[in-house]
Image (cartoon, rainbow, N blue to C red; front, side):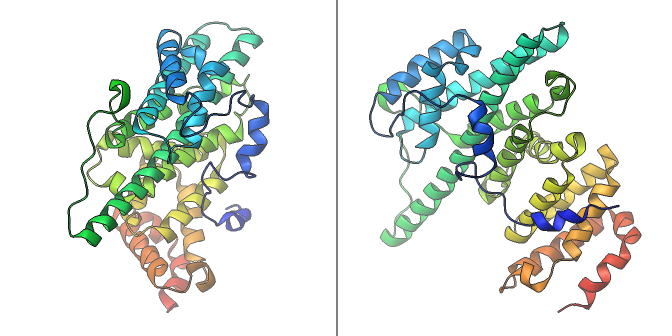
Length: 343
């Protein structure tokens, strides 16, 4: 039977920066930063430079306050920090996550003690948290920058100004369009570890799994991120988004996230229909796709909103899904009757 509680989760995923939501219950299991960095002072760039050097030599150093705190501070103030701080923060996060993945693989290939498992779990949680936050904040800043530059150009009748290639202290400016794929693929590699084995043959922390979903949705919400994206990036995004559902029983959260994406973003229906095809072909997830179809077709006018955008998105999604998985819609044809009979 399809879970009835799916409909109760029909709401957009909130960004990681929304205090008081799911991650605030998980964060106390980690330590809070000892040093609170600001966007325009307090030695943030110097601290990030030192952290980058330490993490390059020893990736597990990311769990220490001297490395974790400046990285976290740069992400908290990502929209207001300088380009050098952003670039250094991304460097620290990528090196830390790569080291965490290697440490987990070494632990899984051996016979680790409970203490060793706890250590690699802690490193993975911290680095996944930073990487997911980096994706969300970078996508937000990129979208804001593009909108602001376009608005300025229209107002002055000029092209948006080009950014300089170099910034303070010789640090290359962060080009998120180039770094995005590396971060997402690295997150996927960490997500595809045997997390149940790392958690002592238990399900991994729900909040950790949600970090992967949050990162994937942050990218998918931006049309510019998908335009001209590589096949490797799109594949990584689909796998991150569906991970919780196909591995850890998170069907409810997955369906809620996909419905929100269908309703809110007109560039996504065809991409999401392709995801459904992957789920059917690679995971034989007919029950999951049927649950999504039922949820989409059961949307009320109140769920759709006052404008015509959401109904058009739903129609585009169903048409695209019919082209890619016709047998699925034929098997659930009765679900489409209300949609076809509606205005």
